[in-house]
Length: 333
Image (cartoon, rainbow, N blue to C red; front, side, top):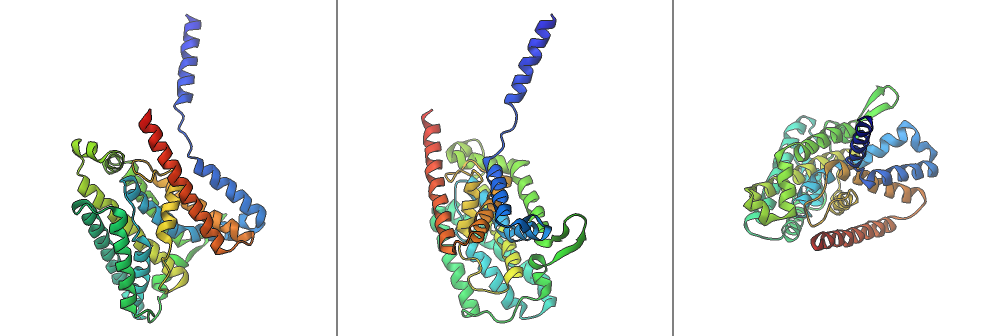
């Protein structure tokens, strides 16, 4: 009897070990990169070093947290970078050097982002235009709008009330000395996006849609509405990232260039499947931190920006090959 009890306990123990949650490899890669950065620059382990790193990574991490909604649903959002640019340029034009206008300008930018997301979703859902083409057209449109609005040279500047979110820090924090407001924004946005995708029915519908759209529709998933929500989430994250980037560097007509591809790369590094049906918000944020860490390490060892672009391109190519291999293997088993 005792032996049977011990045996059953061992069986339960083995079963429980088998059920241990798997840790996404991106977290190990991120840890290894942070160690490498520390060896390259020992000052990185000081609060100023790692807090500034997180502050720089916050816009990309927020953008990746929104982009993963579209990727999981089986699409891409290439308009995110141009929406960042339009947010910065448009805010500068609307503010016209008036700090008092900060809050209503931010509200207008979020309304604009919401509208862009809805249009992207409608075009993809009802006109059956592939998301790659639809958002590429939106990207060109938004870039053109930013240049037309500013005539290629935005006037004025972003007042401190606007730049607060990307530039300011809370001082006197125990142990870490200071806490960037941008990091607080990332934590809030990350929690909201995590809760929506992983703790509500929306996340299950997104994964079902990306995995098999026809089966999802037959199961009662409102695929058009879910796709629109995914694009709206991506666009709102782009506006948030634009507000932070405006706080970092001020007004520029190319502030958002390349960010859409970086966000997609970050999601892929985090294990997202480019064909849809797989991905998570925490892993995408970790992917953004990993990509930022790669760029930081390459910068510390003296490699140029073109080299960083080559690395990013190779990561994307490898990810597409791996995603296709996994999908074909899963289909064959």
